[in-house]
Amino acid sequence: MQVIELGDGKPEVAVVGGIHGDEPCGPIAINRLLAEEPSVERPVKFIIANEEALEAGVRYLDTDLNRAFPGDPDADLHENRLAYDLAREIQDCTTLALHSTQSYADPIGVIKSFDEVARAIYPRLPVNVVIETDEHTDGRLIEYPHTIEVECGLQGTADAADNGYELVRAFLVATGVLRQDKDETRLDAPERDEVSVFRLEGPIPKPEAERYDVLAENFTKVDAGEAFARADDDEIVAEKSFYPVLLSPNGYESIFGYVSKKVGTVE
Ligand SMILES: [Zn+2]
Image 1 (tube, protein in one colour):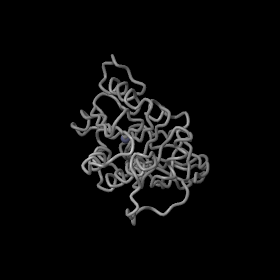
Image 2 (cartoon, rainbow, N blue to C red):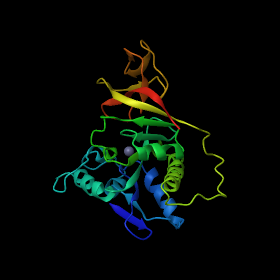
Image 3 (cartoon, protein in one colour):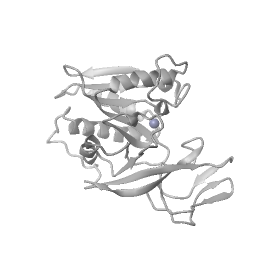
Image 4 (spheres, rainbow, N blue to C red):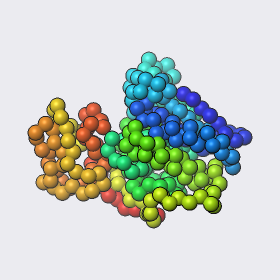
């Protein structure tokens, strides 16, 4: 784990990239920002989490780091030890963790539940949708208070790295680390005045098959009776209507993604 601090004093703001070694957007975004040698209004730390997995170009060495919190300093598995160390690094910080998916090209926010920090920050980030995981956190970093995640875009793409950079800048402005540059024109910033919130209700299991397809769009309602995915030649039909989130054919080993409910908007 690499930790770089800017500014004087103990940082209360943190940015984390590289929790998954096959998601280079976070480390690229962080290194791009650091290369600019920005002057900061308050101390901040940048963390490249799983250097070993990044080096190997794999999601993880022993186990998924973002299912391993709170971790254990004496564990046999690399990611279980790393989870413990990372959790201590972000303690007492307002934290942004950068990820990417195989399911959606635009940025998505992910949060356990809307606390005052998330409510203040998300509307200031270039995201249109936020997923609230509620109790489905399963050892993710967002179990910690004042911690928000963003999915920057599609895994391994230049767009995901560009989005990641914009998200880090916006987060650092929202937390008072960077001053908003008045001359900065964000012509490509998405037009938006509210953030839609989707609450996770549970995973969508994958039956045993050789080949998977998805037929539905993320964040778009699937009606009862509609086929939303395929396993080999079998169509999988919705029993009840739902909004799919993080839905992709091969993004996860044993699930397609998640069933969610649209719960409202935050402005
Ligand atoms: Zn990830």
